[in-house]
Length: 371
Image: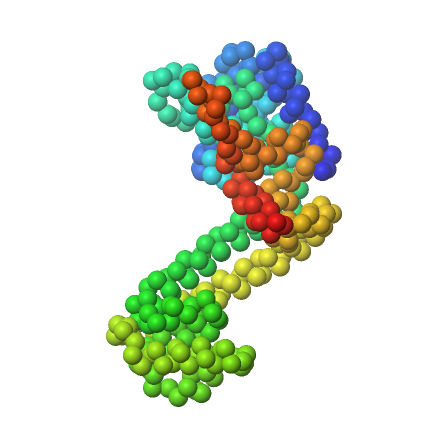
C-alpha cells in the first residue's frame, strides 16, 4: 500500500468520526452523468453555499468546479473540502481520479442510500439531477458515505482483466449453448448423448460434418482423420464408430446451406473466445505475480492461480480493513437473520450474499477443492 493511499484511508477514518462536529468543511455533492455533472455545495450543518452548478465532463468543466470550490472556500473562510460522488456506471471514474490526483478528498455514496434518503428528506420529492446532488451532499454531511478506493494501476489492471475474463466466459457459454441446444439437438440429436466424452472432437464434427447424411457417406477412416488429430486408443475408436453408425439412422432435420455456414461460424467464434480467455489469463497471472501476496495466497489449500487472482483483486490492500468482519461483509459471507416478533430468538442466521459475488464464488470453490 503506497503512502498516498494510506494517507487517504487514515483521513477517511477520521472524517467519519468528526464530520458532524466540523464547522470549517465544505461539502460538495455531485450527481454524475455521462456528458454533464450537477454539483451542490453546502456545509455539514446544512447551510447551502451554492445550489446548482452544471459542468461538462471535460477538463474545462472540471476546472470550473475547482474554481467555484476555491472561491467559495475563500469567501466563507473554510479550510477543508470533501467531494462526494454518485457511482453512476463508470462515468464517475475520470472525475474522481482527476480530483484525487490533485490532492482532493473524494468519497462516494451508494445508489441504494441515495434512493432511500430521497424518501426520507421529502416523501414527495421527485427525482432530478439537481436535487440528487443535494441528496449526495446531505449523505456526505452525515458521514453516510464510503471510502473511494483508487488503488495502484496494477491492481486496477487485475480487476479489469478479471471483468474481461468474466465477459468472455459468458460469451463462451452462450456459444456452446447455441451449438448444443440449437444445431446439434435439431440436426444431429444422437451426437448430444456423447457430448461430454470428447468435446474437441464433437466441435470438429459440428464444424465439418454436422449433416448425418453426409457423415454416413464418408468412410469411417476418412471420418476419423477429419475430426481427430491423433489416435488415443480403443475407447476413442469405439466412440467414433458409434457416432458414425448412428448417423445412418439419425432423426435429424434436413439441412440447407445456411446450417453448415452457421455451424462453422459458431465453432470458429467459440475457439476464438477460448483463445482470448487463455491470453487474458496469461496476462492476468503475469501481473498478479508482481504482488508477494499472490504467492502467499496460493499456499492456502484450494487456492489456485485463478482463485488467488480473484481474492487479490477483490480484497486489494488488506490493510484497509480494520477487522475480519469487514472482510466477511465484502464477500457477503456475514450472517444475518430477521429477528422480529415472537420468533426472534429462534431465527436461524444465514449468509447475507450482499457482497461481491465473484469473491464469494471463488472462496466456495477453494473450500470445495480443499475438502
